[in-house]
Length: 328
Image (cartoon, rainbow, N blue to C red; front, side, top):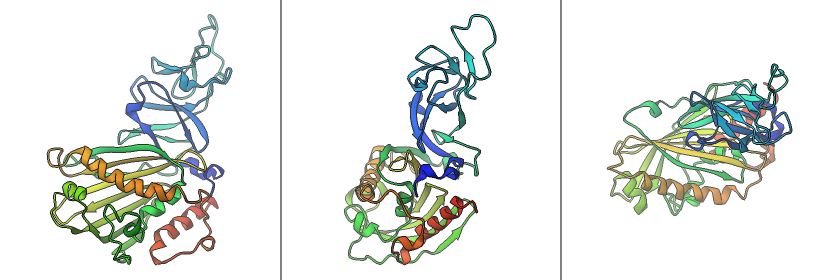
């Protein structure tokens, strides 16, 4: 599946960049569309096509003035709806209604600017822990991976890969057969999957979990949100909850912007954010090394690749996406 050739994908929300990055206008490519993002007069993120309607200069190279984005070429300004609000050269007269650029749905959630290119099909994912005062949010990373978002989503729910890909961080290579999920439930927005996974605690992981044992179990609830977002809520026997949010925002057919943060019900005094990020980065870099070597044109046909029992989540993803593409 080439994401830029699937119009239905334009109707989903994607986190595109941290709000903290929008002190000045910024460019971003989403599903092959070049966007300019900035903060409007109320401090809310806004997104328009990154081309001035006058002489096609990149608006992202301009500045934000009184809530509007001003083109660096001739100073034309545009508001969050894409309407031209100022033409310095037009001393008298009304600004023509044709002086406008395409604007997109844009809002802030979880510290990021989210964009939907067309009328949204679904709401943004709801994460109760993000507003729970017992949890702290830790930004982990924001970077481009050269892989398809679907590959990363399948990987996130593949319980057969950790014992090999993550043998240095938490996998148990000598026990390659993972347990069956406790439950698997399809939802309107994707699915939920609950399972218990025995893992090995490396020295770094022991510190993050405040545990001494070399072995423990992850009581996990993974949730997939169409098309390329997941949360993984891990509960450990000592009561610690470590919830990971990961989005593979599609830049183009070959690459994805990976947005990841975590939510934990502990404190900085117990475990530093730096230590938490260091472990999760070590794990995700192991994934990245494999995923960037996979084919980016992921087939939605189930017969195009071989499968085993633990591939059920990926098979469901492919079937759901195939149905979307067909308009079902």
